Length: 245
Image (cartoon, rainbow, N blue to C red; front, side, top):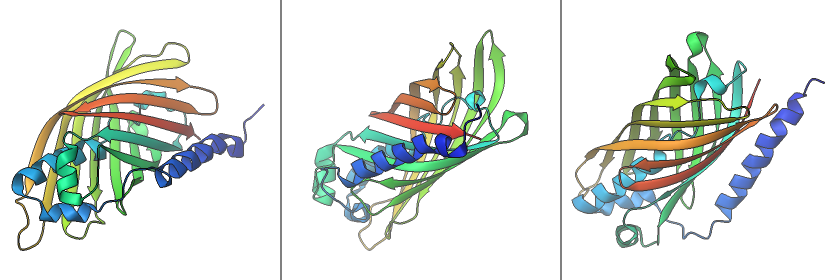
């Protein structure tokens, strides 16, 4: 029996509602990323490293060849543990030991296996939003493993006195075992962070190694992915629920 679009969209809607509610109900103290403009040079560098890990793709979108349709939508959520919560407290006045990001993305499958995705996400406990473009392309098959190239470009434009841009380049390998698809990747995460104001810290350009491992469960109506990521000194955990059409 053919599955209706409603039944395929329902898991994503339910997942999106759950992560949205958890973000709203998060006990973390609210803070403003705009406050980073008052940080010292060393503080701004530490906080920028945490943001680079939190705003990156972290392999959440999963293997490119797993998608079976021409397009799809997904809901995702991730948490990144900060490397120095004392610095966050000194600059923002809030206890920030993790940065949570929850959002929705739409992806499109193009010829030659190219996948393009666009993400809109909220940074929990702040009034700021993340926009990111992700792209992936299968480049080789080694035995039963598929190797793909990946790239992403992200930006936070809602911060008045702080600019935050991220880029990621890397490779990912995956293999199918029935309904399960383990995958992992490594690459380089690049962040450009700047602040404006009379006493603003100097701009930071950061380069960090990025490595992650994930597991995707491919079901007839939806797919669920979980991933663990290490970007520099920061560890992140993420979940993503996707449907294809």
